[in-house]
Image 1 (tube, rainbow, N blue to C red):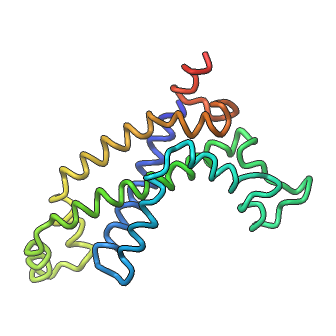
Image 2 (image 1 turned 180 degrees about the horizontal axis):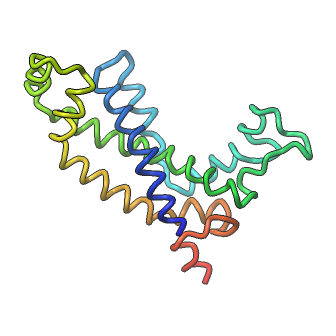
Length: 183
């Protein structure tokens, strides 16, 4: 089922990317508030609006992606949402754009709650930053990991809006929810 692909894509791409961005923003780099707002903005938007935005990005004749690639002339266009072999992946990128911000905020909250003494103890024991994260910080965030996993499963099953807005749930976007609706 395409819902399984959706879930695997979220778990292998959106979740690690959201976690990575949370770790970067946890270091209080310059402009952290701006980056948090910009990365969280897609979460505030509904999936229907995200569908419309990405339709504009993927449009064959005037879309941003084909314009950047120089493929806007007739016969040279890439139909990102019309080709059943690539439109699922195009929609997954659009959905991940939203999911990354959601995961990032959850992990950022989890990182803020980790006791700094744990990191200091790991550094004193000779652990580098990566080792401290994977052996100390990440296990401490087990409750956040469970929340992220549950939300990721829920979001992959709720994928109806985006798939229906883009292709009415057809042409490679046959998710469980769109099949139920179409039948």
